[in-house]
Length: 314
Image (tube, rainbow, N blue to C red; front, side):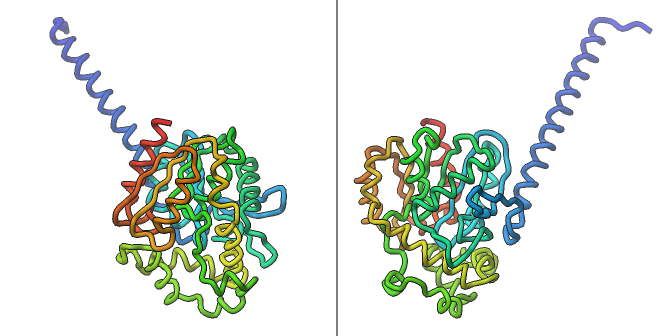
């Protein structure tokens, strides 16, 4: 059997085309498998990973993805659950770690635990070193945004990129009664239940449709095992967000952070954000018109767009 040059050309072209199709199909399959793994995280379950720091503090955390390290830091009363809508997308480009801060979520809780600004910074720094994150990008929400800014100010060579979502810096998030009493944890645990969590979330979200049974469980469940110590973390964190050095101390911040806020935020209002921006030597700033305090849950795609724009330029 003989083949003319045209036949050989057609066979080679068909073979090459088939190989290309197989390559694309395999690549898409691997990509889909990775994305499914991330999207299938059961956010109502405790984080998969745990780390014990040199100071004895135990930290629960989630981690996935490949690339540059990125660390997500939640706000007061929250846990890793708050990142569930942007975590899968960030994992496509970065190695993402989201942490339960000491006193919150599924990390260590104790009535003796100090949840002040310097103490939380120390714990997160030790966590970064313990699990060997390499100069991670910091993204923090509310109290977590303040911690992220504080860390980058005190360790400018270690944290060169920081994003703060509605940072609570010198903001009075906790009622006057709780600010005056050293510890009301024992008494508060009687009132923390599904109904009160619904009220709290309706204050956090401007879009009340986000207050579902699933969302309520995600925020309430970490409190149910030993509520007294759990609530202590929340109450003691008042010393962090009301630290007398905030926000004017951020005039010493050498890097250019990204600050994201919203007009409908009932917890960190316009005046608080203006005070922070006035203190910062330089910054990028974006304001959303309709989201509430947890911007990353109400408008995740908008937040992701601003995050990627900032990281691609700076």
